[in-house]
Each structure stands twice: as structure tokens, then as C-alpha cells.
Amino acid sequence: MISNNDILKKLRVAHKLRDTDIIEILKLVDFNISKGEINNFFRKEDHPKYVKCGDQVLRNFLNGLIIHLRGPMEKKPKTESKPRPSRPRRPQ
Image (spheres, rainbow, N blue to C red):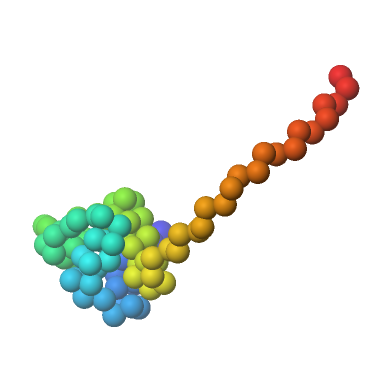
């Protein structure tokens, strides 16, 4: 089974990201993390400072990566909500 750390590593290589890029991408979704914490995700599992990448970190990274690649989501113009027509009730 592939770990969150492996996914993060593969995305880092595929998008040619540096540690500072990853930090900036996480800041796009208001998730602050230090360079040292990022480096701990990329260490070998037997290294004493290795840290498992949690679901929350990976989820925020993926959301930030979407914003980084596509740009911020456009806000939809507000439309007046029309009341729904009532449906006739079925006989019981």
C-alpha cells in the first residue's frame, strides 16, 4: 500500500517542487508548516526524524496544489432564489 509520504514525494518530483514551493502551496489553504517538518516527510522510514505524513497535511497540500495549478476558484454571481413550486401530495 502506498503511504501519504510516498504520494507527497511523487507529487513533489512530478511538479518539480522545492520545499519552499510546498510551504507556499500549503499557505494558499491557510495551513502553516515549517521547512523542517516538510523535510521530515521526505526522510527514509528508518531515519530517527522520519515523520508519517498525516491525512490532514496531504489533503491540505492537494487542495493547495489545485489552487496553485488552476488559480483560485471564481465566485459565482448570486442569483435570486426562486421558491420551489409545491408538488401535489400523493394519496395515502
